Amino acid sequence: MSLPRPKTTICSLSFPADGVLLVTLTRAKELNTIPNHGHEELSRVWQWMDSSPQLLVGIFTGSGRAFCTVADLREWNEAPTEKQGVLPPEGFCGISQRRGRKPIIAAVNGLAVGGRMEVLINCDMVICSPKAVLSLADVKVGLSLLGGTLPLLVQKIGRGHTVDMTLTGRNIMPEEALRWGLVDRLADDPVTEAVEVSKSIAANSPDAVWATREGIFLGMSGKDSFEAGKEFQDKYWEPFLKKGQNVKEGIAAFLERRKPNWDLNWNKAKL
Image (cartoon, rainbow, N blue to C red; front, side):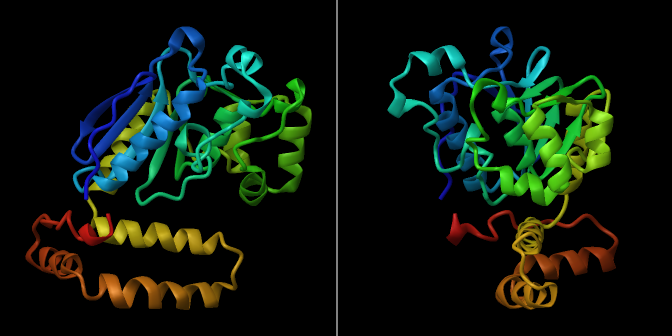
């Protein structure tokens, strides 16, 4: 069942293409710092996207010169100790520990600092401006990565690069991040590029995209590749794709040289 559209106070929601949700942080004057309630708010946004059959891909970006920066440290400092660092199960911005059903692309337009870097680490794809600045400087203020992404970062860029980035807290430029595999593409206009990528994803069979994404997670689980491949076939191909309407529609459309008419309610029972 689709959830109601959530009310937002720190971001705007727009739809730049069919099936694409663009979430833009609107705290430009505060460099898009996230107040405590903002994490829950964004978590509800992504849950709404996952529950909505018409929404297939999300894009996350910021307004002004920052993608997303540190927590609101003034609010942090004034809060009781037991309230500091409290996050929803999905982590920073509802993303850093999110599994979700649908992909999110980070369109990094500017500064990405601290916990907000944790957000892009767990996004499905990162498109970054060449002028952006990336930093995990938590150690400089006596913190560590509270969003839980240190193991994922090691998996993504290796131990040495993770040590370099997290123990020094230094700024990483986009070209270096691209070489490391922390960033997937550079683009002068990362939002426009993210929209084009999202349109390509949204044009595909929604259940095939979901199953393929789940297979990618299996590949990150540390399981033997043959074991993971067998699990993917047993769990996603046989009960889902093989018996679904979209595989029949996709093959028919290919043979008839026409655009597929996908069933967007393929997993209605699961939502």
